[in-house]
Length: 356
Ligand code: CP
Image 1 (tube, protein in one colour):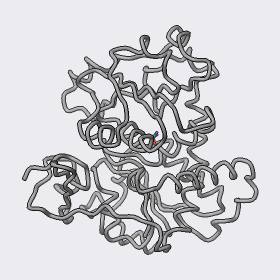
Image 2 (cartoon, helix red, strand yellow; image 1 turned 60 degrees about the vertical axis):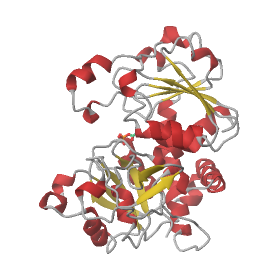
Image 3 (cartoon, helix red, strand yellow; image 1 turned 90 degrees about the vertical axis):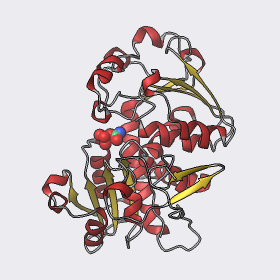
Image 4 (spheres, protein in one colour; image 1 turned 30 degrees about the horizontal axis):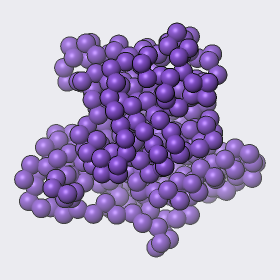
């Protein structure tokens, strides 16, 4: 069974196929208006969303299919204590494909262990958001015409920002990618992304302390919100929330072809005076999200029983415990799974470094 839990569940070739299909959908909308007739998508959203849930809904509707699900776990039997795996066993009786967002890291991966239908991770805690990455890749391709030879500035909350983690994982596989990391020390990129992703694949990155000094060298400026909901210490949130703000004055230093992306929602990290700049691509990015999700639904339904399509997160118990209190392995009865990468053991569900 092919699922999408992490961007690396898709090969570069599979990503290219999805992007090509999304571009064909954009050019030939009518051709796809009935292709999912009789199919049902379940959207299981345990955490708030506007874009991801509604773009999945619009995507399935534009393919001629139907959508069911919940937008708030409190209105489902989750509020009575039902586990993720039991919920998915039930939804398997009603739907052909499932998109799940959960605040618990690794919850969508736990769902794949028992699901009879493809699972799409629509965002799990601070960990991963692969369909946002597919949206970002389609947007970069449409804005700049290529996914190779790009310098990408990542700004804001690089610690809790799951869209950043997934985008870095995806972009390391393209030629000559470089990253510039612009974050306060409290919100620096996690070690596992620097070490196990960038260093492992030989991708160049450097840290910068402001937007102004680097805006002239980047092809993509990827802005992110400082996410209040991930902080346990609100004083720390207040200290860092307005660290980096992009405005029209700073845009003067950017390349003519540079594109500003943001997964949205924004709070005040992009001033509204940037919105009218042709390089502000973040609302075009939202629409690309619907088209790429249409392509993804079609491809996962097509690939689900193809033995050539790989999906394997591996891992074994190894006598370890995950230290992350927000990991599914500490919150629900799932089988602990750990993997050794070089000399480090990591939890397969959330990628935290394990306590042995
Ligand atoms: N980009 C994104 O995931 O937005 P939502 O939280 O509104 O789905």
